[in-house]
Length: 249
Image 1 (cartoon, rainbow, N blue to C red):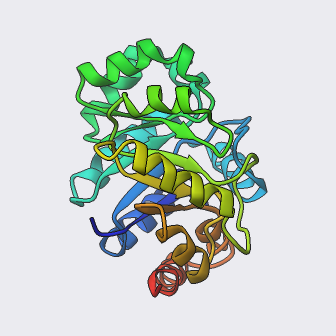
Image 2 (tube, rainbow, N blue to C red):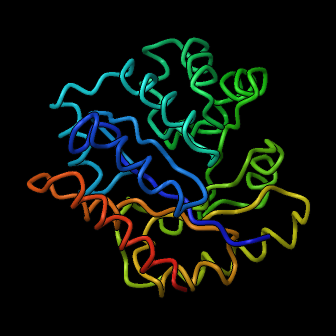
């Protein structure tokens, strides 16, 4: 399969309209989009995305706005779109209601980093019933037994977290992560593709990830390109330039 390049942008940063303007504006350059639904305590996110989430919430970004704008986005692109957020958002809205609303937006699936597998069965079943993908996470410390269970979810892809830490740009990809991905693929030849995230920030890290992974997920490196003091066109040009630069590998 062709190697994939998935991007993450925070909904509502630097503004509600701006954020979705950027998503539409880069959709032709990428293979999928993660819409980050801002949350006040994003445990897996580093300072760049954490700050963006805080800014978006201060801007008045509401869940109803995310659904409305996401529906408009999916109607204007054929690239898969996913919601990335935290379990508290689903719980407060009602898990079934959230899944139903996500389906109505025509997103492909949900990425919920703080919901452990042992507590996710109900949400996974709801996603399956509504035709959505529940994207599981694997890390370098995930044991074989747990990894086998995660592969059995049959999601669009496995999100491989390259480090045991938070999101953020890094100069290189964890060698152990690449070895683990290769091992997982050998053991699960018919499993979903594995996309590597956390730390992808340059053509070099993209190239390193592609040695084992089926794709990469890029967030913080792109969010850094969004300057709240510049106009939208300038922001979009920066983002498109950054993506082209990273994809040159």
